[in-house]
Image (tube, rainbow, N blue to C red; front, side, top):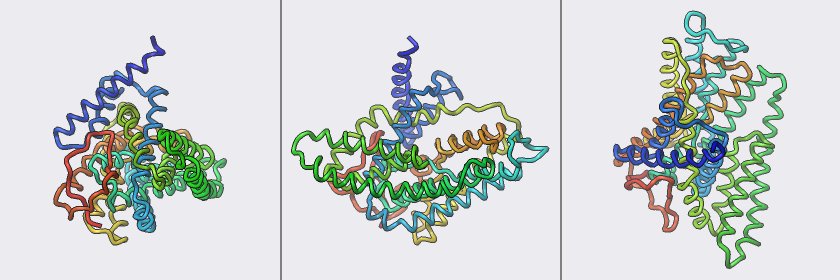
Length: 422
């Protein structure tokens, strides 16, 4: 019976994520919030009905890969190119400000009399590492929310996507720098060369795939399903190569694969197929799995206080840092707010970084609870704040999406809202 329990787990996840999604929709919140809350309710933090098994983890990983692949297909490449410099500045300031803020919060609390850490690294390195955790951005939550709101193909949406990719690279560099100080086996030069190598590889692979697609796949008059299959194969291969050979996040490889696919003739057809599989299985499992990770240990008042401060710092530093970067690049005030809010969510990225730091003694066990709390709060609050900053009346209407290019989502499309000007 145990070997078939995953079937019941999937049924429970699909039912609860949809029910909670409908409930949050009734109170004017994005349905992705309901899916996240469903995971927390079902997981060890509350009812304990489900736990994150290896099967759920792997399905969730495919879910986030498909989500970012679809985001790549829906991205306006010309707008992304135009915002390249801006995205770098937004990402850079959006990394530096949370790094300083996280270090400052840890510096105040990580001392005798308040919180005594059991990490093996020096107190200074531990404080820096907590700042590095706050630099992480999990853009998958933002992508799904913007898709639900119909605002992914806007200037703010493209800036968020571009900045998130660069944020990921800067985060890898920062993590490598701090781990190299704690682990002599890590070589920062090798890591930087791998990052450069990945983008060279992505350019070459994208060029070859595009030529292959145009000459062979697109020439066939029948068998449209082969387009979706070939596209998915390319997405998975790019995701695998990014992680396995270059140490870059698999979702970065998936996003770039989506950008390449967005240039082919059958993009709309391919996207419709991925929307279906995402709606039916992958997206609900992914969002629920984030909630299933939540398991809070017993905490002292000092740790509770640190958790509250760290959560506030995590939210404000991304809004201020990325918003300031956007303003420096000429974005309007309402666009800067949207970009800053869109970068708040830490999600599974912060948990992965924290687990790596814990293994190296850079993060004491006392700080794992606060990190989990920050992840939960930022993950849930991001869709809520996005709905607020994209509310009607905040800007002039955006240009309508061309026919056949409508953005669909795992969640039912909400009522149309006022967009933003270019």
